[in-house]
Length: 109
Image 1: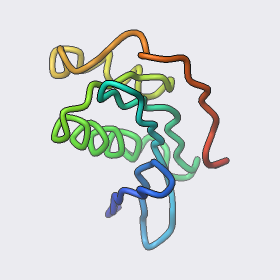
Image 2: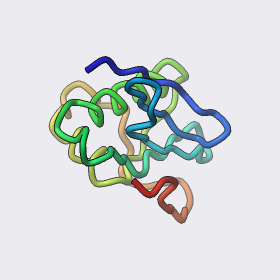
Image 3: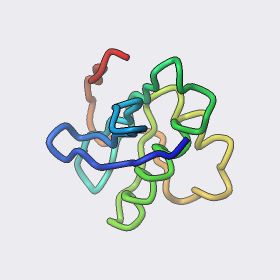
Image 4: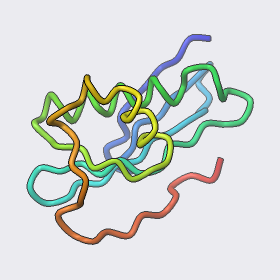
């Protein structure tokens, strides 16, 4: 399976495509003090357990690090992913957001 990951700036998310079909997303929100809140990760059921969520997580984390953002993991998948790779992301993660923020699903997959 060949994935294409693109950043959709208008929708504040990264999108995964396979054969030009949207198969997954990871949403983010910009918070004060250069913090990027990573919210829901959704992958169509047919494509789950094939590394789509991991590819999306890696891409958004790369964006955060290259732009000097700290990461506030909110969503279940991204929290679990970062917990598994804790040693790779030490110093990058914050435990509390700088402000309260409501998070909603962006795509009902």
